[in-house]
Amino acid sequence: AYEMRLSLVGAEMCIRDSQQSKEGAFMINSIQHFQEQGVKNLTEIFSHYTDDLTKFAEMVYGVTKEVPKLGLSLIEEELESYDELLRKRQDLRKGWYIERRDETKLLTSLGEICYSRTYFHNKETGEYCYLLDRLMGLESHARISEDAEARILEEAVESSYRKGGINACIGEQEVSKETVMNKLHTLEFPLLEPLKEKRRVSRLYIDADEDHVSLQYLEKKGDIKKPRVNTVMPKLIYVYEDVNFDGSKHELVNCHYFGGDYAGTEGTKELWQEVFDFITESYDEEVLEKIYINGDGADWIRTGAGMHAKARFVLDRFHMHKYIISATSHLKDSAQDARSEIYRAINGKRKWAAEEAFDKILHVTENETKAKAVESAKNYILGNWAGIMESVRAKDKSLQCSAEGHVSHIYSDRMSSRPLGWSRTGADKMARLRIYRQNKRDILELVRYQKKELPLAAGAEEVIYSATQMLAAERRNKNRLGKLADMPVYSIPYPQIKKIAALKNHIWGL
Image 1 (cartoon, rainbow, N blue to C red):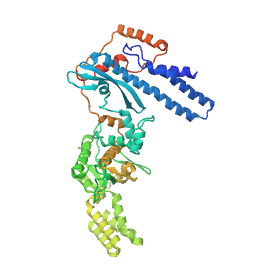
Image 2: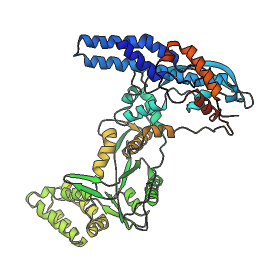
Image 3: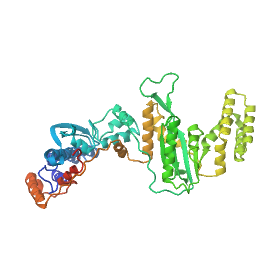
Image 4: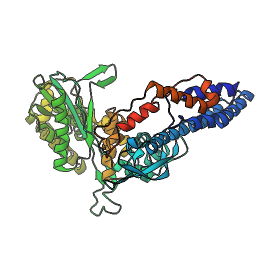
């Protein structure tokens, strides 16, 4: 019963419909092998489970190990069927001549496939290539498929290079952590696409902060000399429209993220330009009145406030409270009174009163270390007075910067919360990859973004089969399939006629 059921399932899934022609029956070898060996192996797995129904996990493990073998075999034969068409149909490869046939391996997310491909020579241009590789979009000497690369990056962005290599496929094959690192280092990232329709809001909010990531080296090991510059600070900026309050939970409305190393003055300007370009293309600026930029007052954050006419810097309350507490914590019983005096000066928009409050604290502070902390807090609050007043005047409940938490979640969890050492390139690329994922963008599409599009052939004609040819092909297939031809048929997409049309429309170098 097991064998009959599995045989039917295998045949129903994989037998090609009657439109196949003499270029080769679709995946017949894979189906036959699965019937001969795969069904037998699965039957043994289910038989063992019948003997002991508590071994359900073992049954799942067994099926998980066996079924991908069929999938890999089907993929191998599918690729070889295209290569066979290229070899036998000269009209599909005008100007290209056969040199030899080679066997190659490719790691996919399902496992490693091994298939044959033909090496062609274009006598007119002198070019040599595997046409099948071009059709598949594979670069020279590629050994990892796009889906496997996506699995690698999806794991590496969460845990480590080593685990990314282990996660390359569901099989036992893996790649080295050095390979994963090299994949990351060469990534290029597309700009964030603007919203499909321009939104009409009167205010936008931007929070900005940075992480501190330890460097192992800059470009190569040993290039960090004394005095040590052993940190890189990837920047994080996110734009949102409002904050929804749901009990204890705060949710940012329509939030979009930007970030990476963007070192130096030019890097900072480039980052902010990306942000404001996104805003310009996504929001109706005739309706937009103000853009509040929340931050700790760092120079790179203030730069953003000067690059857009409607942007206003606002000192985030977290850092304001942090410095006020630092200046008053040593006062013990009178600490709360001192803080209240500072807050009254701030809410009353009286800078001179805030300065007097700090001077009073300094007057009663004898410890030199504590006195330096008070002086630092005084300079910080007074130096960012305009940013504090912007918040006071706005009286906007959505001006509640959460950048510290976002930096922890987006950057620190992967890059700085553990004793890791990065290169500047690695830190920048990982930061951008984390941003890319935070924007809920597709990792597979990122992998495909790395590919350079190859030129398509011009003037290719579609092949049209007559009904007579189709009937003849059906008779040939029936003779070749034998008993399999009488079983229920469920066709798999892209029959032979469509394959030929696809090749016609994708061959280069006519």
